[in-house]
Length: 160
Image 1 (tube, rainbow, N blue to C red):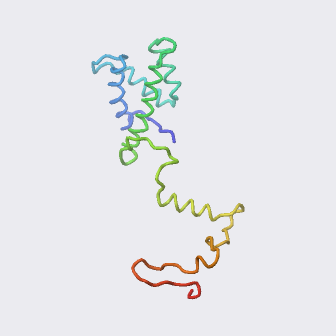
Image 2 (cartoon, rainbow, N blue to C red):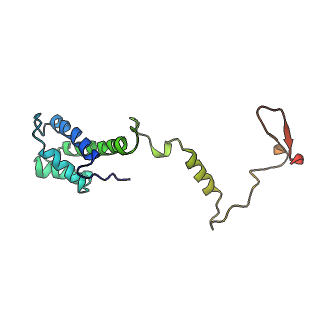
Image 3 (tube, rainbow, N blue to C red):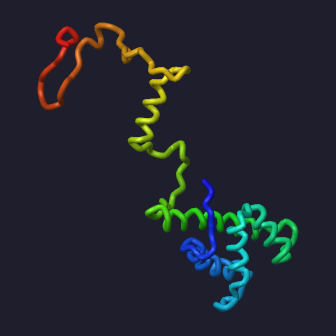
């Protein structure tokens, strides 16, 4: 999901606080606190919904006059979008994202994810509930089941 940046929000303020030092680090701004025009311009590009590539292109070609093949603007743009997601999560998402990025396919599923997957697996192609309740019953091998880990009671299918 794309994060929306709006002027005057805590997210825009937090971005301003991290962008200025990064611009100084990149050599695109002086260390003085009054050189905020480029920072404001970068935030306005985010507010206007520019993509990573568009921001990199504007910085490289229109504002900084970087040479062809110079990847600094693209590197900055990648860093910028990582900061947008990180700060948005920190400010609006209730906590700090883990520092190690995980592949969504490898994430540990929550209880709700498991329940949704089970419900989806029980549905047939036409949306009706699957009537097969055998649970893989192949005969004598599954005739008993353990009821409680604290009791030594064994229930057979004949008892059910």
